[in-house]
Amino acid sequence: MTEEDDRILFIDGEAMVIDKPAGLAVHPGSRTKRSLEDHLKDLRFGFQREPLPVHRLDRDTSGCLLLARNPKAHKRFQRAFEEKRVEKTYVAVLDGVPAAEEGEVSLCLAKISSAEEGWRMVPDRHGKSAFSRWRRVAVSGGRALVVFRPETGRTHQVRVHAASGIGIPISGDPVYGRGQGPMLLHALSLRLEREGKAPIEARAPLPEHFRAAGFTDDLV
Image (cartoon, rainbow, N blue to C red; front, top):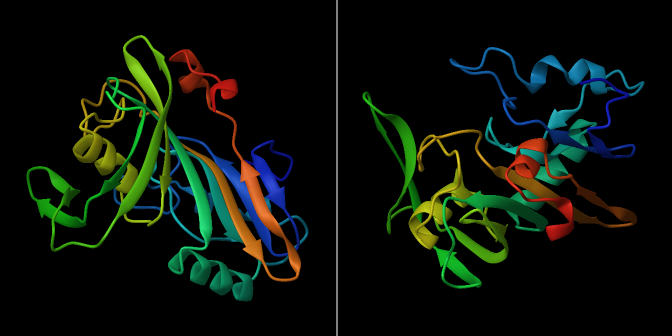
């Protein structure tokens, strides 16, 4: 990923939105030695400071990721996420077709961990509140393309709301589904209003593995 990369969807003096590829972790971990942090020096666009990720996307989730180009902007954008002022849209291919065309999922989520299976998020009425709206937009090969609009930003929220809320996991999800093939979850768009400035607004085209599954940009 370089300054000339077509994955840069939006940029101005304080913000940047990139189209993060699936397979690239935002931060390094025990199983992900290389991450977006290895590319930040290439995203300075003449600034001395490297941009800072404002939020996270799962390693296997592609799409819109907001970066701040200075510390003050980073604090403002993080506060906007905490105050639920960032409009986010995700699109996913489910391993089946929901009977309803649209709906809402309200499932509190909590983190559990075991030595055998590692950690995961589970529905738990004592967990943190999580709410998503969803709409089925297309069907192909016995699978549905669904648009999600999460109103909260819990870890793995869309993945758990698909599997446990709608009752059909996301195709390729290795934790909450069958894990066969790439995980078909994409951060489609992001919008953040700013006082005195034009909004931060970006939309990431569907990646190739969505098109290979029979779903194209004109459907969303």
